[in-house]
Amino acid sequence: MADRYEQEPEETNPEEIGKGDKEIDLVELAKKLWSRRMLILKWCGVGAILGLVIAFSIPREYTTGVKLAPEMGNDSKGSSGSLGALAAMAGIGGGGQSSDAVYPLLYPDIIKSVPFCMSLLDIPLTDKDGERKFTLEEYLQNDIKSPWWSAIMGAPRKLIGLLTPKSEDQQAKGKDPFRLTQDEQNMVDYLGKHVTCNVDQKTYVVNISVEMQDPVVSAVLADSVAHRLKEYIIDYRTNKSRDDLAYIEKLNEEAKLAYYAAQQRYANYLDTHQGIVMYSAQTMRDRLENEATLAFNVYNQTSQKLQMAKAKVQEETPVYAAIEPATVPLKPSGPRKVLILAGFIFLSFVGGCAWVLFVQPLKKQFKRENDKENRDEV
Image 1: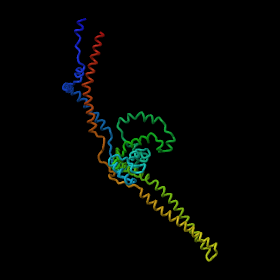
Image 2: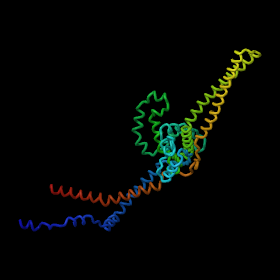
Image 3: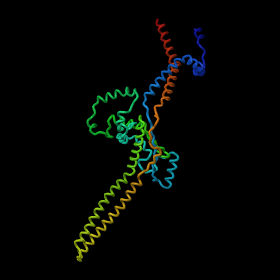
Image 4: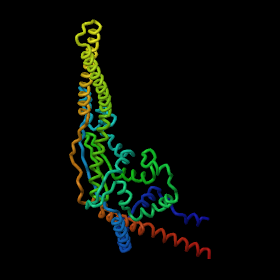
């Protein structure tokens, strides 16, 4: 019993044990990695091969940018306008200086909306040589290339799509933003990822960027997106004014016809009642003359309002200055093969070091424990 107590180790300070466990001999780790440098180089070589395969499997893409400077309304006057300008300079303005419901900070959401993306599918396009003509919908369905792993991952979904019959209602209705088919949803998602819009919160400069696999398609689509966006905003800004203009045009046309009719009745009465001096005839003549004069006054007022309504439509039509128009890009913007290759080599190097420092020692320890258990069982 005494011998057993004498053989027990002395108590040690737990803090000293923790300090000893946390100490790492960097020189020893470096020597261990250097001794297995060939294995790590093999890992890097495999990573380089994978990086090259993936980098050359990703199709080239070309980016076209368009910059627009929208005309901002001066709805805020006096001190409120000054405070709004100071808030915009401080970067805290949310575009609320205008009473419009669609202000520049909402332009990215408009471009990514389903109706706007669906309206782009009918844009006419041409290839690089200008020989083949097609629409954006045909380009997205037939000419978009994907990496080889996309075909493998999308094979089950395509198989399910082939086995599932399409409903006759969808085929008859055609394009309906309220109820999209799977192909239309895929095209909308693709456009949402490759057509982007950013708005500077201080200057409200609109930056539209389009990334496509064909440089000509990229430039044409960027120009079309900018044009459709301007049409959308102009249509919204002038919607009320155009409705008022149409209503005043209708009133003016009715007043014109009423004036011509009253004038014709007055002229006919004068032609048929010349030389008659009866008071009833004179009263009727005065009445018809007053009706013609009143009709002329109404027609004159509606004509003036019509001119004012036309001027208001022109006044409320916003103007967009193209700071940077769309041009056909000459060099691809992606993929960046050098970065992909460097990333795979780095990850392979880290993986090789982790294999040498952690995985192999754990495997050896596990093997020794299994051998020891086998010998004890024997």
